[in-house]
Image 1 (tube, rainbow, N blue to C red):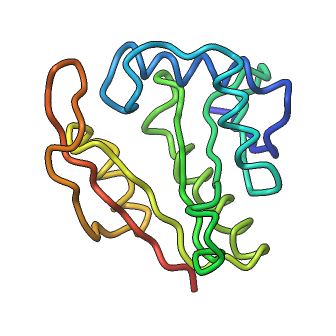
Image 2: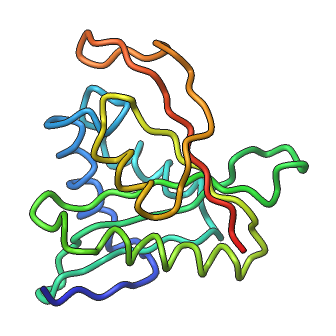
Length: 164
C-alpha cells in the first residue's frame, strides 16, 4: 500500500470527518454516539492548533487516517503533556499506518518539548488498547463504569507514554 504522511491541512478535514463518523456509527472507538458535523469536527481540530497533527494519504490522495496531539490541560503544570487522538480508515487498518502516524506525532512532540503523551480509550475497545500497548503505551489507570455507549457501561482506560 502506497501511503504518505503530511501535516494535516484544511483540505483533509472532510476525509478525516468521514473516518471519524465511520467509527461513531460502526464501533465503540469513539465516545460520541451520533455522527458529528463539520463545524464540531473543525472545533476539535482547531483545539490542537500549533500542535503536531498528521494525515495519512493513500496513493490516490484520499485520507487513509489521521492523528493529532492537543494540550492535555490548560494548566501550566501540564505544559509538557499532550493527549492523543488517532483514527485509521477501516480499509487501511493493520498495515502499519497507525504506527507511522504515532511515530510522526512523537517526533513532533519532541520538537516542541513534550515529555508525555496520554490517550484515553474505552474499555470496550480492546483493539485500540492492544494497538497503544504495541506502540509503547502503558495502562496507568481506569475510571470504572463512567461511560455509557449504546446502553453498555464502560471504563475509561488511561494510557501513557513517556518520551525519551
